[in-house]
Amino acid sequence: MEHKTFLGKSNLRVPRLGVGAMTWGDAKGLARLHPAKTAYGGAHGFEEEKRALEFSLEAGVNLFDTAAMYSNGAAELRLGELARGKDVIIATKFPGGFSMKEEELPKQLEASLKRLGREYIELYQHHYPMPKISIPKLMDQLANVVEAGKVKAVGVSNYSAEQLREAHAALAKRGIPLASNQVEYSLLNRKPEVDGVLEACRELGITLIAQTPLAGGRLTGKYSAQNRAGGLFRRILPQYSRKAMEEMQPVIKLLREIGEKYSKTPSQVALRWLIENPAVLPIPGAKNGKQAADNAEALTFSLTAEEVQRLSQATMAWRK
Image 1 (cartoon, rainbow, N blue to C red):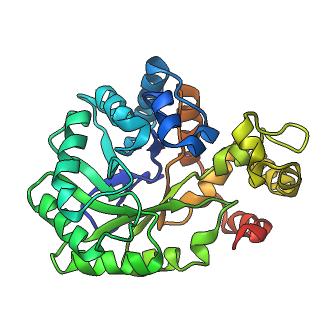
Image 2: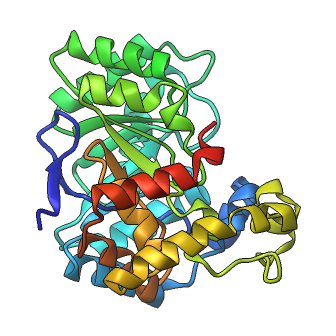
């Protein structure tokens, strides 16, 4: 079974599954900067994160995604430390805060390179569009660092279809492909299918990197109306309400049914549904070795076209 692919039209060869390292490093730093992100749980510590990386590499999953702003830079520091001397593809995002000017990109890049302890970054992604940032000017800056050998491939994150096309066109003028767009996508969040993002990715040959592919744990099968997610923040989110938990139970039931055929869990089937789309690359988070090993199991089987369609039909209510 082929587990490798090129990221978009770039020369970067990656596995069909990545690892989200958002919670690695300093959990308190993450909470300060991103209170909402604590819904996904804090860091589990150096040893567990080391196991997550090692288990992933053993399974052939060597793409790890982080960002300059995660835990105030601690996530990049931790990933860089754990990845040193290993065959790891690092994807990170900039800026390190909530604002920047186009001309500040080289400084942002140098800061990430220093934290990661590397001479170049395989995939460098603009974390989110900003009103005062000119996409063409920013892409020009990114083209410069690619030409300087400090970045191997360029990506964006949270870009709309229109912004994606603008970024792609600007880079094309410099002969550089836009490799990826990282957005939230899962069976319980199928917005990229209706807002034009997935269509634009397919048309332009851009990989859609699916963040939160297990819908914040809702697709793992461990939550129900009777056993709701723990933590105050999760409990006040509408997607974790008792009503929402009840509505998704038929989806979990179908994931279990399909999973039984392959001796796989609901989360592994949910990840495989994304992997079956050649334009999509999911990056589930892994806070420890067990999660990393469980996620990698999604690469060990395939769904039939009928099973993919059944799951798509069962989650039509989330296609909005």
